[in-house]
Image (tube, rainbow, N blue to C red; front, side, top):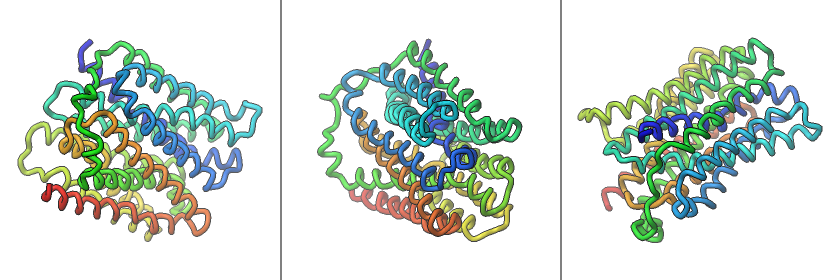
Length: 394
């Protein structure tokens, strides 16, 4: 095996992340009807998912540098398989259904936390001169995984009925099951020794790093809030059948996000001179996301609502992977702990956004949820303005 196998394993691991993060949201309506769950309870599943991921990132960020990548990434995929199997067993386990769903979420969220912590530094450690390009392409596979989850899960439930959701969950766990064996055998670069790492204290003292933390927080909130609640919104408010809303709305959001990332990766790799800097493209994308939030909140027209999904996917595409690339560029000798802090901040945003939206939806309505949570793309745009200011000073 060569490092190309490791790269492919990272791509597959990113698809596993997409399954772990997005499958529950696609199942919101079936879970709600079968077990009588409120929007707040459904939103709490997403919040706990990301809260666990944050905890894993913070606890194990420095531990990974001591023991290496391999054992942690293999264990992560094992947890993904076990957690999804337990989640799928909810209808037959003689316990409170919400308890089973929540514990299953905690188990596979642990896997997601390790994947979020490890995949980027594993890829970054592979010898290549195109770090930002490779990072963007890898994160594009998250989008394509999201697209596949939304499209294939919706079609499966449309054909076999909403009660078939445990079966499709078991089908999806085959991907992390396969990746266990790939990561167990592929070549893996060594972690950067502690003596060669930049001082965490000095990096934290720099405003440039602090603003990167806030950028990825708002990136996670902007991306996941829209992706997690679009399916329910298009069905309940716009009046589209679930199969149409998921295929034309959620899937287009994920597809455009993925095309944005892989397109940037290809253009960057080929050295396209007319391409604006990554940070400027991120700022433009944040503005696109803001516009899309207001469009979907203001319209009852299905075509405009689906257009907003497309625009938002394009807008948020570079925000998360772009922040990681900007951090690597600014602090090239930071250890895995830097990825841990950024992953934790992004996951806090990813947990906060959908949970806030769910609470607003229960009390005021789904439409108002998009109006008020537009504060997240606003925050991303403002923080990128501060990033340019601090970068010039630095």
